[in-house]
Amino acid sequence: MSQRITDTTGPASWEDLVTAALLGTDRREPPPATLTPGKDAPAALLDAAAVHTVRRRAGLRPATAAPRPDPAPADDRNELPPAAHRRLLQFLTDRAAPAAGGRRGAAPDLTELLPQWLAAANEHGYRAPAPLLPALLDAARARADLRPQTLSFAGARGLWLARFNPEWKYALRGAVGGSVLLPAADDTNAVLQLWEEGLFAERVALLESIRAAAPARALALLTGTWRTERAEDRLMFLDTLRTGLSDNDENFLEHTLGDRSRNVRAAAAELLSALPRSAFAERMAARATACVRPGTAPGTIAVEAPRECDTGMQRDGVVPNPPTGRGKRAWWLSQIVESAPLTVWSRILAGRAPGEIVTLTVADGWADELHTAWCRAAVRQRDAEWARALLGAPAASPETGPGTASLSERAKLLNILPPGERARWAAEFVSAHGLSDAFQLLGVCAVPWAEPLGHAVVDALEIAREAGSYPWSFSGVMGLAERCLDPAEASRLDLLTAAPEESETSSPGAGTYWSEAFHRLVSTLRLREAMHRELAP
Image (cartoon, rainbow, N blue to C red; front, top):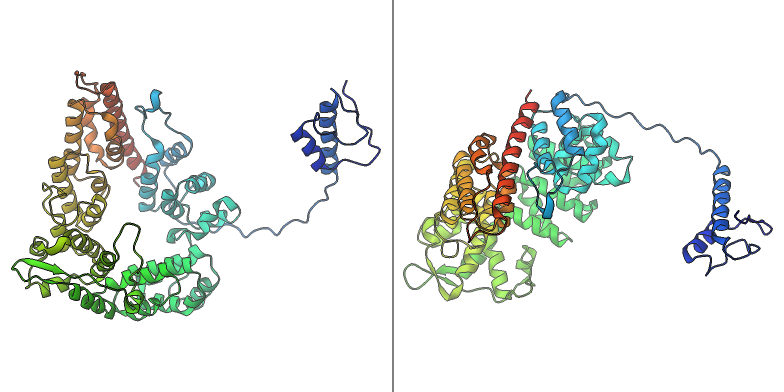
C-alpha cells in the first residue's frame, strides 16, 4: 500500500509536484516536506498530483458565456455530386503507402491529385461540403500550394470558420476572391467600409474585383490608404495592378519608386518596365543605349557597362550592391537592360528583328550577360517574338543556342508562347534531347498535355525503360506525367506495365521499378478520368 500524504503545511503547488516528477524523487524530496523519502515516494507523489488535480478542477468557477458568433454566411454555389463528395473525402483521408525500399509503389498518390481536383471543382462552381471544411483548411495549412484553390472552394464559409482556429490564420491573409462575399462595385459606402475595416484577404479580393471591372476606381481606392499600409501589404496590393496595367497607372507607380520599402520599389520598377511608353522606360532606354550600341565591325554589338550606380539609377530600382560573386558593373548593366523596352534594340540596330539581333556577335565576352538580361526583359514585357528568338530552335543545344542555357529562364520564356505553340516546342525539345533537361519546360505546359507533347514524353520514357536506364532519375518526370498526361493515354501505356527483361547493362531492380511506375501512371490517369467524370454537372 502506498504511503498517504499528511497535509500539515498546506497543499503543495503544482509546480513543486512537476519539478519533483521531472528530477525524480531520489534527487528532489517530494512535497509536502513531512513525506518520508523512500521506495513509496513515487506512488505518494502520484497521489499528491491526483489530489491536486481534483482540487484544481473542483475550484473552477463557471465562466461567463461568450457572445454567440454571427451565423456562417450563405453559399449559393452548387452542391457537389455524391460521387465527387466521396472522392474528396478519400483525398482528404487516404494516403498511398510507400512500397518497400522507399519506392512509391504502384498505387496513385492521392495527395498529388487534390490540387487538380480542387481546380476542377472551382471551375464547375461547386461549394465545399460544410462537414469537410475543417479537413480542407487543415490540408491547406500543411501545404501552401493548396491554399489558393482551397480557399476559393471553401468560400466565405471557410473564411468565417478560420476566425475560430488560430492554426487557420493563414486563410485570413490569403488573397482569394472566391472566399469573400464582396459588395457590389457600385455600392460606394459598402466598398469603402470593407476596404477600411475588412480583413486583408477581403481587401485584396475587393481590390482585385474592382480592378477587373474599373481599374481607375481600384487605383483611387489604393492611393487613398497607401501611406498607412504595411510594407508587406503594399507589396501584395501592387501585385493586383498587373491586371489591366496601363499608362493610367504610371503616375502612381512613379511615385511608388520613392517608397521606403526596397521590395515595393523593385515591384514598382518591374511594373513600369512593362509600360514601354512610360517615363521610366524612356530613362532606362537612354541608359541601355548608352551601354549597348552597334559595334564598329558589321554585325557586332559593343558593350560598355556603367561605371557607377548614381542616385537616379537607384531611385529607378537599380540595386547598387551585387550578389556575392557578381561584378558590380555587370550587375548594373543587367538590371538596366532587363528594364529597358525591347523595342529600343531594333531601333538602334538597323531595324533588325529579334531573331537577327540575338545572332549578332557581342564583343568582349558580354554575350551571356546581355542575352540573359534580354530574356528577363522578354518575360517582364510578355513579348512572344523575343521569346521565340531567345529560345531558338527546339533541337538546338541550350549551351550553344541564343538566349541563355539556364533551364529556369528558358521555361519562363516558353511560358510566354501560346499554349499550342508551347506544347509543340516542348515536344520537339524532348524528342531531340530526351527528358534529362526537360523537367522545368514540361512544368509550364498546359494541362492536360497536348497530344504531340504527351506522345513525346511517353516515347522518351519507353526508350529509357528499354535501355535499362537508371530509373529513379526519371521519377520527377513520372510524377509530372501522372498529373499532366491526357487520361486518354492510359490505354496506350498498358503494354508498358509489364516488367522489361533486364540486360547486363541494366540498373539492378530497374525492371521492377519501371513496371511499378507505369502501373501507377496508368492507374492515376484512369483515376483522373473518373475524377473529372464525377465532377461533370
